[in-house]
Length: 125
Length: 141
Image (cartoon, rainbow over all chains, first blue to last red; front, side, top):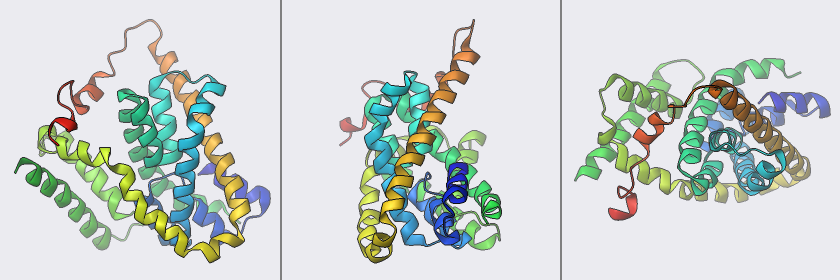
């Protein structure tokens, strides 16, 4: 979420698109509501959330190898936080601990984003 | 029958979440209310884990199916999306990699740091959630 605010600053992203991008790392149901309630485009948010999920699902294995992330707990949290449900599907393939941690991370990331997103909107120009 | 009641319990919590989201003026979606409510119910013992576990695990195992309608919805937005598709793809790729990498490294660092010099017993709680061997969903299907 903070990364979206930074990106929005860096490339002078349109406010509406920035808000739409904001909840892209949380699960669709929560993310769409957040984007909608803050003035973003709801269905575009859903599209971006799906795209984020697929990206995370695809790059996870490679990224963990490159960065040397071997701890199952860390893998789970990373997948759940960055790419929500589709990441968790990947985490469940990796193992039990990964899956459980990933589900937990979705919930925490979802709640945190829902609570912090209104503040982040204030930081946008 | 057991699964019907488990399903009804989960749906019940979701429904209360919907009502709360309508009633309270906070910008929090109904699913978050449901999530927090379910956690409270389980922690306080109003629900026991066995009362929702199998159906919950079933939903988790078919999680990706719930994404099909949303993915089809992307097609409806194609006109709006195609104009900004290129920056969006780049941004999505970079941010996802960044978030995942940073979260992963940081969690691993914290986990190792916290574990120094003592045996970790913190996996016990997940063992409670995840079914034991021979208790998997495939048996019930």
